[in-house]
Image (spheres, rainbow, N blue to C red):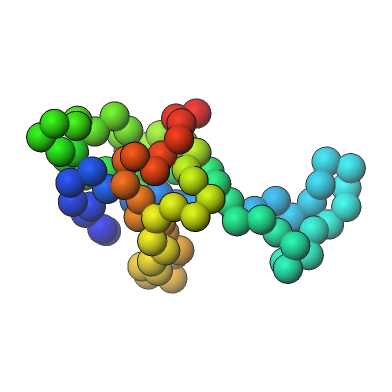
Length: 88
């Protein structure tokens, strides 16, 4: 498992929706990048900025935030706490 440093957070992005509310299927080429995910690990924070998110939180993050990594065939996202917009 990844152990993030400072104010970084490891997020497992939620899968993009494959079907609309009316029942239409969305092709892979038209899917939007997910902006919501579950926190898998969080760093200790910075001296002047404590960590506000914790493991298990579901968060919203910026569309182009963070760095995508693959660990054990699982796609994860590493973002700074400042890139997280809200906790759901």
